[in-house]
Length: 455
Image (cartoon, rainbow, N blue to C red; front, top):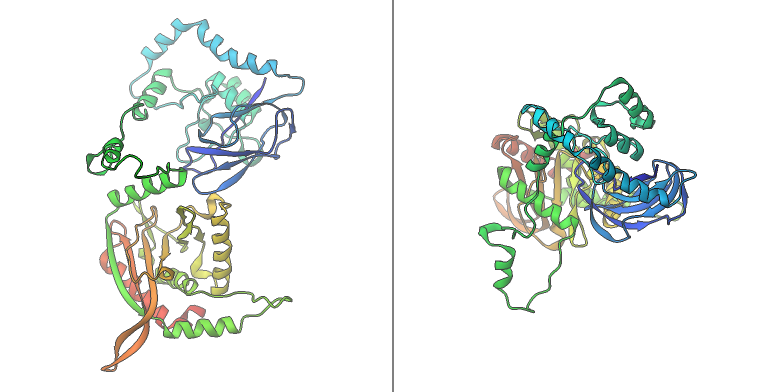
């Protein structure tokens, strides 16, 4: 039978994606592992590989189509010996099967116990969307289709394919042994009803109770241009709204003196080794020092290197620092893993690579998800100080302003020093005020005595 190719979930939070480009066409033969398409998520453009072999029988979703739901069929793969007529036959089969015994569905619904756990709902291609329990279940499209036909819950199976992928033989063994049967249809429908989206046509309500139409009515026709939200803007709006509404922020600010750091930076850059073409191995920025200092500060105050959950605080062994990178009409936060254990030159080169690929939308999900804290630097725009919004699940974020000459008092006399204002936003559920102050005090000490960042 024809095998549907589904829109993949390229990250744990992905719900829809844009099919940016097909790299195959109808009639092409593909093997497992061949790159067949490019998918745009809200953060990156990623390549999609085939998981089965066959011939591309029909492309169902054209290039450039936005908001394609995860697990929606995007193409159909034909097995050896099949032709296009098999596609129409496969499409007609589910409808015919459901029409055979409509009366038998009612007793099944009536017998479903109220306490039965929800089973996976049917996906658009007739396969059961597996229960994820917080993790993506890897299964071949053929295995998913067979699981849907046989009523098998994929989350109850252990895959025998590469990297634990559930394949056809796993479904056949489950059918033979009677394991993994999905819950009755009533539980499925109840779960679907609870998750039902807002009714079509209902006007979304924004802050202050105003609808979209009410907002537009306040401005003259032709006086504005509408720029529809892309996936990234929707994600930014949703996540930061949730953060400000659910995370109790508090803010701590301090001025740090940069003169010693700027001298050390100049010395290190001047002494950097060069390659055969005379290009230096590294070029340190002030932000590289900030990332390192923030990481070491949290390693010195480990209780603040925390993430809040409803049942416990997660105290992290490593300090993974996200760094806000502005990209065209958006923002992304690639993560420097184990930043407390890396040298300044490694942090600098890694950050340049991540920032470039972030702007090209080539980051992998593992490179921008997770992290324990973050750094947002607007100093290059002349911003003196600001307070950043925490990006969950981080417990904090450091907002960095510009370094500029300012009047200071030294030994009872007025002097000029290069100073920078930083503001630490903290999740008060995970980190208390005194603990946040310890972090900022440690940060100030490291920045003003920067040789400590080298040992």
